[in-house]
Image (cartoon, rainbow, N blue to C red; front, side, top):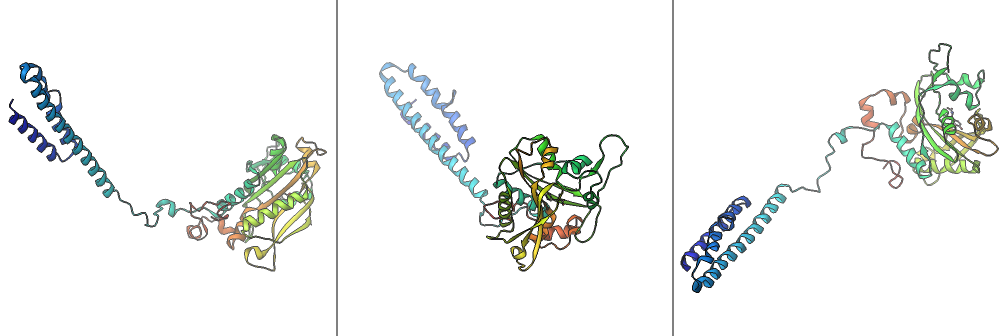
Length: 356
Ligand code: DAH
């Protein structure tokens, strides 16, 4: 093959390379030239068959063609790849300044009870409490007797209990009237130190603007060897400040009576916390756990002590978010949910404020 033929082959291949509009076409040109039976590879195979005097020059000429073709292939490949990336960037361009479209996440709502439970759990988690749970259907023993409310105790009357059909055998079952039985379950299954909150549904046969047959409570329990009433007051004050998102909250601890605590206190907050100064609002019941209760759970009251509290979850949700009627909370009315419900991404955090 003459030098001019080689020149022609080279310029033809360079033209083909320049004309390849995508990576597949370019690879076709590469295989046709440098592949096993490609035109340039064919010439390489002939170097050895040349007479010795022209072999060197022939080899050099073909190698020059090969290098030129290879360089052109590399360069074209790089530019086709860059063009492909540019095309993709152009077609997938996103305007990050557009408002977020939430889709179904934007339509759905978190019920105020769920939201407020998450807020409360977050606040107590920060103070080292974990979450415990118990069943809605409870035994008479755990709901009452072990909480120092024996049969015939007058406190049973106040609870408007829903009893389940009783065959006369086995434990008498009921719908729990408060979350306090979770205290018992926890003390019977865990060794102190204990620090829990227990949210859940509770049931009482009662219905008006501020009572529904099912409502929600959160129980709190701390048991160890050194806890005293100062701790109880501090924990509840810290809770009230964080929950109502105020720097300071005035609280009133009123002497009261619950069979499972001694002494017992009802706790009111100054309604200034919700922007209505001049009124006291009751938010929970609390006290030092009665030694009988500790003993009833198999713990030694000489060694262990602590405090407990119970508050109405729906009630504090209504106070914080200005919800007027408890019954609407459970009416499953979508218009109400759109008004009082929370966005799914509005996660309560300590750092962002309880309501995010
Ligand atoms: N169980 C009480 C109720 O339902 C509330 C309560 C009061 C719980 C005092 C407590 C407590 O743990 O210490 O009315």
